Each structure stands twice: as structure tokens, then as C-alpha cells.
Image 1: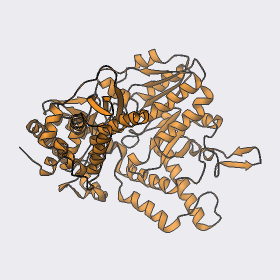
Image 2: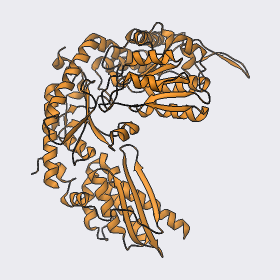
Image 3: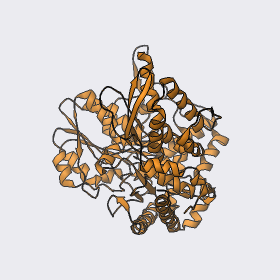
Image 4: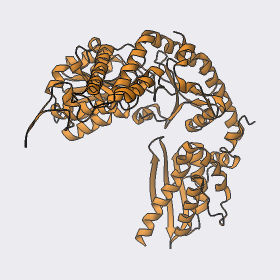
Length: 406
Length: 148
């Protein structure tokens, strides 16, 4: 994998921020977009913009082919059995909400349990809080180890025959922990529960096969994997999706409409009410082509190297705390003693370095870590060791700067 | 040491002094106005208590968690409004808001330390940090106005 060549495909990276070369270390929030993705969207709007599934005209057919072609690319990308199992959504949040509102409300009863973990992103907490409130079910949390990993014994302890849903993130957006979702799915299934996996931080960075994991639902976003914002995917096992009711009603998703009753289209369209996110899906399809061309294994290897390099370099800074396990995905979350992460992020920004500061949409995890906020540097296929050197050097300056102004 | 003059416009010495040695830190006892506010996008939070007598703020204390900008701004705000009438405090808040947005503001009132926060207007991502305590104060005093 030639990172220098790859960087040429990301025009945004070639710029100065505050007089310094941009060092973009916030890909876990959103990734940058390569030319093939930008061009695919541009091309759609310039050449064949049209609504899908209804036009008899040529552009309509072209748009439909591209939209459904993207669905097939997604199917192949995550190893699903059929395109009927691939539903386009607005993103991970919408995908999880769809499962909660449809499957959750229909199948969870008073006295049942929904099991999640302490490390979840808000988008995989609040939909389940809502289902628990509405149904009278109990929401339970799988505890974490001090290094921010999950032990399967604790999963066994928490999941019981009363558990109806186990919802867990594949990769933590704060700790970088890679969760044993396949084993968790086995434990859930043994207890008669379904498993919902939040794949927002996994699909951009590693090979994912939903049939191998044997999860019942898998959700992810396009914009974190080189695709545009506003497009995401819900994968669901066909027999589950078939029994589920849509949550949005209107055009596109119907079969027959009467005055008082209507029937729905087949899978996957019954879940895609309204004009779909056509350009988004086409952009996501182009992103998948791009990632597969680079090779997911190469990307994972590159990021693993960067993360290990960053861990080693950051450890040389006195008073810097790193959160999460050693074996991790391509991100590092940290704090510097005496300097608030917002101040860290502002000083880094003045050096052209973009990192995230805050609670990372994981307030329960922040509470578990006993911090109110942290700073996070996250890496992707276009990042380099030199950029990590720039980060480390800027962090050292940050420390000096704040010890001076104090 | 200063490696970046752009940063020096934000992190003025007086701001750092308020951050390190916050004035009026704590919680008032007895009858008081109690306001909790947070910035959900970043996790900063403030707990502000105000003692208001005859339309005048006779005491103010705050506690909370946040960055240097949000905590120093809270410290300066509590210092500035003590002894002021509700109307004067709200006027000050308007001036501060204008200052944060980079607008021309009423400079007939001596702002004291608060002036040091002017540089925040050049850092759009940090304006919300600076205004948190002031929004809490406004919320508390608007409630008082409604009562009188």
C-alpha cells in the first residue's frame, strides 16, 4: 500500500490550516473522500440524476441500476446472503433506531431484558433505553475490564434466557477495543436473543462478514468509510426483516394503497419510504470499490502499525494518560494532566492538526473512565507516521505552553 | 515561552489566572437561585447559585467542569455581577454576547477582566465554552424577573 500515492486521491488533504500542513486525525468522526467517490456523485448529478424505481425513461433506469448496483456492492462487501437483507438508511443511528422501533417494540415485553455494554456510543444506548421504557423491559450493561475490554464470562453472566436483544459495538470509537462479536452472538443465540452490532467503526477499517459473525442485525455509516454523509446501511437476517413492520410509511415502500388499508413492497424496499438517498448510495458504492481496491487487509495492517507507533510515541510524553487496550483499532484517546482536552484540541488546531475533543457521544463510558472529556486522534489509510510525529511534537509544545501560561 | 501568537490572543494571562485560581467557587447556602447547565456537545457543565435581594445580586458562586475558557469565564462572570441589579447583569450579558460574536459592543461600561475574553471571538469553536456561564446566569435571572 503506497500511502503517498493514495493521498493524491484525497484533494482535501493537500492544504494548509492556520499556516501549517493539515494533519487530519479525526477520521473516526468522519473520513475524507477520495476522488472516485466525489466523481461518482458528481457524475450522477451531471449525467443521470433521476428518481428510481418508477421512471420508464432512460435516466430513471440508469439511476435505478446504479442505486441497486450499490446495494449489491454492499451485500458483497459485508458478506450478506442476499440484497433483500441490505436496507439503505441515513446512517448507523437511523439503522439502529429502525431495529429498536420495529423489532424491539414488537418483540420485547415487560420483564424482558435488553443487554448492552458500558462502551456503547449514544446511538446504541438511547434507542434501547426508549424500548425499555416503552415496554417495561430492563436495560442491563455488560461491565468492562480495567483496560476497556469485555470478558466473555461477563457476557455469559449478563445475558440470560430473559434477554431478547443484545446490542454491542464491533469497535469502540473511544477505546479502540475490538469486541468479540462472534462469540457474543453465540452467547446471545444460546439464550434465544438476537444480536445487533454497531459497525460504524469496523466496516471502514477491517474485513467484516456478517454471516461469519452470525449477527442478526449489523449497522454502519457511509461517511466514515470514504463515502458521503447521509447514507448508511442496516443489514438484517431475512427471516427477521420479513416479520418486521416498516417504521416509515409513504411513497416507494408500498405495494397496494387503499382508502383504509395498504400493503408493503417486498424486502428491502418496504423499509425505504420516500425517495431514497440515491446519490449517497452511489457514493457509498464507489467508496466500497475504492476500499476493496486498496484492500481491507492492507488498511487494517497499516492502521495497526500507526496505532502501535502512536501508542509508543505518546508514552514518551510525561503526564499523558492513554485509555483502552494495547491491541486496538486505529485510534488513540488520551488526556494530558492539567490541560483540558478542548484546550489541547485548540492548540493542536493552531498547529494544523485536527483531533476530536469531548465525550465522543459516549457519556456512560466517560463516567466509567472517570473523566468528563478526552482528546482522540484517529487514523485512516491516508495517515502517516510523520503525521503522528507532528502530533507528538505538538502535544509536547502544548504541555510547555500551558505550563508557561499557568 | 510562546510558540504561537495566534494562541496568545486566546490564552491571555488573566484568563489562565482565573482558570487556575477561580473566584467564587462553591455553592451558596440558604435561599438562592439554583441553575444547572451543560454543553451537551462537549460535556462542560456549570452549577451556578445566585443570591438575589431586592432586585440585586448580592452573592454568586459556581462549580463545574470544563476547559480553561468556560471555567475562567464563569469565574469572571460571578465577579462581575456581584452587587449589580438584575437589569445591569442582563445588560452585561448582552454586551458579552455581542463581544463573543465579534460585534461592536457598548464600551461605556468598564468590563475589567472580562475584556480578556475578547480573543475567543476569533476561535468560533470555543465561543460556546465562554458563553455557558453567562447563559446560566441569564436563565436564573429571567426566572427572577418573572417573579417580581
